[in-house]
Image (cartoon, rainbow, N blue to C red; front, side, top):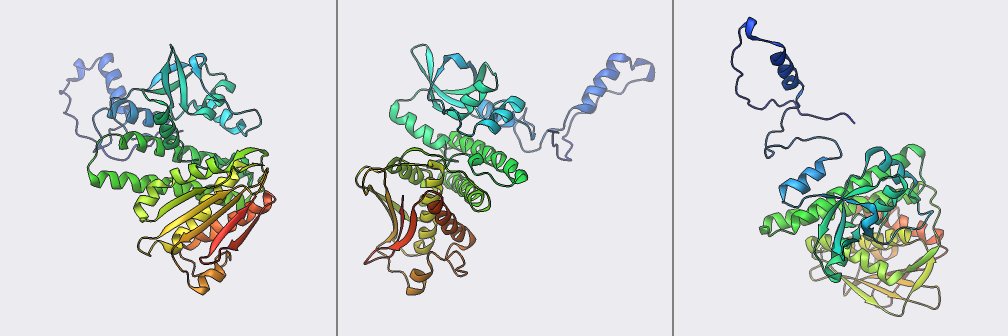
Length: 377
């Protein structure tokens, strides 16, 4: 990809004047190098250039915060690998062409490294024939590792890359690239937010992370609606999947002031597609949250229960808020033009309805005292 350099010429001291007979071949070569050197971007620290290439994220991580990216042999990294047939083909091609754009996160253990985040990238790097990968090495206990994995994977956080949703060829090529960019932004924001920051900066980071998660979810919901996704059939712990969705939506929850109350009942494990399930759950939370976000002290209650072996019931409801009759009647109507939350909330409902059909489940209105939306699988 060609480098992008804004038309800004930084100040450089004027070179000493040369007489014609003093300007030898070395001077000419130096002049050519100087002329070809890309201009520095004003406002960035020394040594930085605003470049549209794979190394800009590494520069930010490695220089700005003193946390260097280390290149580690793949044979020294232990961690879970996605099984074959999990839609890695496009990622493998990307890694073979461009390398790993976003460092993996690992921790040292007994002379080797445990993988915290980046299982798909590691599997793709192995399949592409790479022998080593860029990594951030952390010192963390098991609990901290789980938090790091959730933060680094906020682009999925309940949603995996969108390759599985097979849309039109041109669009299918754009979605994985979009998800990769959003994932890189999210991981970098997590690194920045770890440092002590003033309140204003923490709010700004939270806002960006919330927008990144919302954009990643919306891309996947649109892929479900406009493509022909082929659902996977693998065991899914629905309770764990819902917890991951809620964790990924934490920055948005903090900004909106609407709490998400997770209530877990009997174990609920189904044979289905975790990506589609989490897209549906995130969408229902977004749609219900939009209904109550202007009501002080409101919450969104998400209840998960198993109705028996291989089944799950997910209920999303406004907690303690009585909705107008018009809102209750139109909640599952994707064409409701006055819907709070606008097009995003309408897309959420439409995607959840399609996913319920794809997975052989159903989506319906429930609740007695308060309206709720129920997804049964």
